[in-house]
Every structure is written in structure tokens, then in C-alpha cells.
Image 1 (cartoon, rainbow, N blue to C red):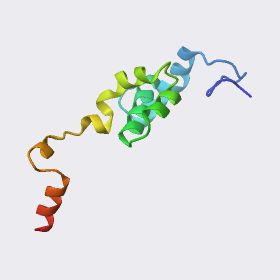
Image 2: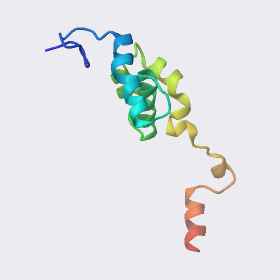
Image 3: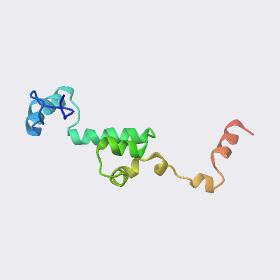
Image 4: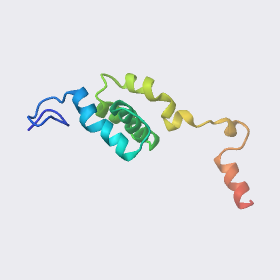
Amino acid sequence: MSLWVFPNRLGRLLNYGNFMDRVWNKAMEKTELRRRTPHDMRHTYATLRLLRGHSLSEVSKEMGHASVEITFRTYFKWLPIERHSNIDELDGEGEETQTRRKWGY
């Protein structure tokens, strides 16, 4: 059993340059996707998990970050609770008011 998620044929650490040349760049060309790196895909994964409301601590653990603080600083803008503005509630337009207006009562 390899220690690596994506080992080379011998079960050892992949050579990043070799992987990029032989696999990644060919896949990008074949799929006609906009150019991105494996590291970009890592950010995409974390962002999608957080947008779906998954635990910051769980995402941090999966990303292998030394602390939740690193994950928080990197992905703060993608945390749903941080993107939600409570300004409507201050104006008396909270969820309850919006629901009453929607249903006409």
C-alpha cells in the first residue's frame, strides 16, 4: 500500500513535472478546459465544500492545513455565513417579513 494518493508506477512520489507533461497538460488540451493547475483544482474542491456548508474544521483537515486558521484566512470569502448580509433584518425585512409579504399576510 502506497503512502501517496497518486503514486508513480513503483508506489513512490510522483515527479510533478513529469506528471504535468505526460498527463495533466494532455488532459487539459483534450477536454478543452481553461488552463488550470492541480493546485487550482484543490482550491476549487475546498471552495465547493465550504459553499455547501461543510465544516471548516473538516475541510481544513482534508486539505492538510496545519490549523483551521490557515483554512479560514484562505477561504473566508467563500464561507456562506460570511457572505450573507443581515442588513435586511436591520431594515425590518428579515425572513419572517419576507415570507409574510410573499404569501400576502
